[in-house]
Image 1 (cartoon, rainbow, N blue to C red):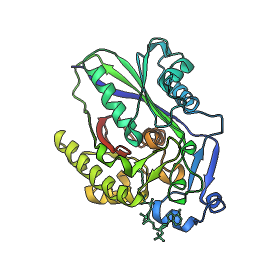
Image 2: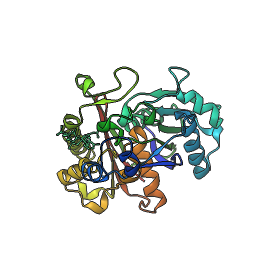
Image 3: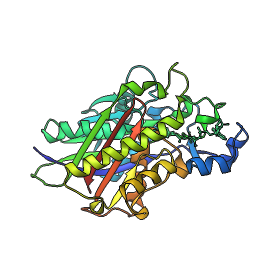
Image 4: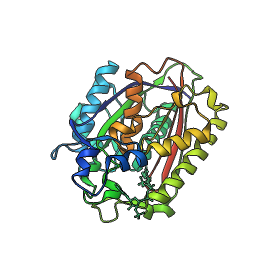
Length: 312
Ligand SMILES: CC(C)(COP(=O)(O)OP(=O)(O)OC[C@H]1O[C@@H](n2cnc3c(N)ncnc32)[C@H](O)[C@@H]1OP(=O)(O)O)[C@@H](O)C(=O)NCCC(=O)NCCS
């Protein structure tokens, strides 16, 4: 088995920013309600003709530039999106050609907000057994397209964006941590869905409780399976859906606030893109050092959920 490492990150956020004050003009809500219930202040919104693949290509260019890896070196492209440009071709094929990844096999996966962790776990298998040596993950979401802008229960929560990573096989046997656990439970399909292929429908209150419980359980499980304690984690990057969920999770796991990365206030919930956007930001701010152990956890429609621990 080979070792593997994330060697580069990158992201893209659309220029247009929609604030709580803007939403006050669209639905019966207030900055005060949104801030206290969710912690969200702003979200980025893609232009009308700016598709998930267009945002993914911009994020991909950013990752390639930072990595120094040539497009033809990428052998596997996994794209996580709940808002593909079309039924087919896959958004991955569109991004592949947009980035010139001519030697990559490319496919989409559908796991809603857990898309990044699902993608990491797929890439892990291909790299660890040696099928491929260099993989790219792009998470790209245009939730503005599946939001009913008259539904105050959901329109305040989500934003658009794209981000991802390059993961590389290490030729030498290596002992650094790269562990993922993913889970699904389709019996909750109705609680968070796009039932008519049009708009998000969500039972927010129930989702809230199950999200905290599931993410609490899976982070405890992954720490145990790696033989680690919360004190060993240098940075905890949870899915950015709601500040109250993040705080409840931090309290449950007894992780000090300064070790929890939070940017939900500026992006809202960008679904699969939320963890890699946060990871890229944390890296650009110099918050991660070589050898640091980072823990991710996500939860989303399906239900799907997952956790990862990686070493930087
Ligand atoms: C959606 C969410 C913020 C709502 O917060 P909440 O504390 O659960 O609030 P409730 O749904 O109980 O609603 C409370 C009241 O606020 C109202 N309300 C809902 N949205 C509102 C808004 N944008 N502005 C003002 N009032 C609003 C409701 O109509 C309800 O009014 P009522 O009591 O008269 O019926 C919260 O449930 C949540 O974040 N859930 C998880 C969502 C999520 O993260 N999903 C993705 C997971 S990946």
